[in-house]
Image (cartoon, rainbow, N blue to C red; front, side, top):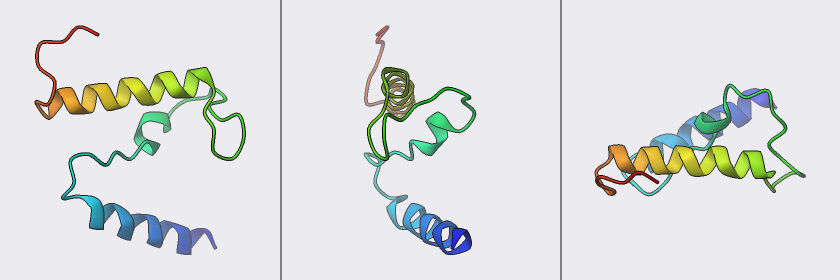
Length: 70
């Protein structure tokens, strides 16, 4: 089952590469030891903060946001 999920996930990532507004938040949460989910889909405050920072840094690198210190 996990292998099928990985295959599906990889294919989905590949099909979405052309869109600069789609973010893989797995990267934001990959190395944390914190509890980042309240349940099967809702983030804790820590999880929300980590994802927001990841999205901000990503769009800053893409040049969508310039000279911001948020």
